[in-house]
Image (tube, rainbow, N blue to C red; front, side, top):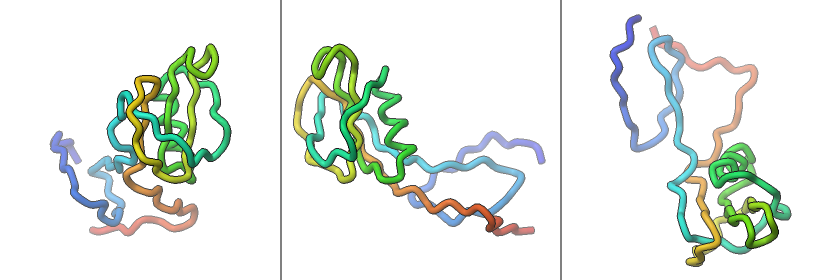
Length: 119
């Protein structure tokens, strides 16, 4: 089937349906919050990362992560730190940091269940 090049944005996440026509995805993270710290609710101690994007990616890949805070280099040591959160702590204005929150929980992964096919 030829591509139409049309993008359909959704307000909610509909059930998935297998189809060779389309590529779909779910936005999991909200916009980066520049100059925002979200102190507390740490899953584990902060770890070294290179960029705020890599910290956000770490949160996206960790099913327990509900939010993150990236602390710029030179604040908590020479390297930047990433703090993953098991909750969404309140925002605190602070130029040290970039934070973000998960806007949708990860759907459970199905390993042996095919998606519904519509003819």
